[in-house]
Length: 321
Image (cartoon, rainbow, N blue to C red):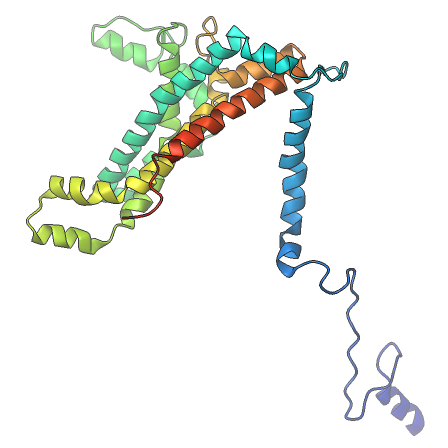
């Protein structure tokens, strides 16, 4: 009995080698799937992200680029290499350039108010409006809504007979407006919807930048006798130059990718007056079944976006003065 107890006390659970003198069980070496030093530790941690990045971004880009040089269809037919024929057709496609013009016009008429209005909203909140949390919630809440809800809400507002805007115009003695069926007004109506929906994001960026302005700059300006307007023009706005450039770049890129609200509000109408280039690509690829040509259009537009982005970088301050 004593011998058995002694043996069990000196044998580690599960069997194996007896403990070393002093009762310390030797540690087993860890099992390694890769030899030591095979991958740097940083790369090993980033490997899951890199795999997902390659699978869901790099590979689709490469696949789309290859498709743009073929005549593959959505039905799976074709797939023969056609060289630059799709690009030549895209560059001579009047409808493609028409939709590119709509996209650029929308970018222009939406970016300016989305930057200016967001800045004004941030200044109003920063200067101490009563009930700041209410204003912050009211300004930012629409940005949290899905595009389907936004489109449904503004379709009601734009109704020719029962819509709120035409009711207000009638009450003021003005003529009603066909907000979404008039070619001269429809794109502006979509820009107004986009302004209400997405201005909250830019507002948040400007508000964060305002809160980062050092207080001693305002104190020095007040000591020098500067009033509120002088502090705004000489202190606040110069400190916001960099964030204004960043917001402008982000907004231009977002406006160039317009699709959802246009498709839900007008489907590119009336008579194609609001049709953006992304909707044209969608129609060519998924309605006309020409995936190869749609891919070529996407890469032509991608080149335009890159050119616009590079041109914008020249106006964005790189360092704080």
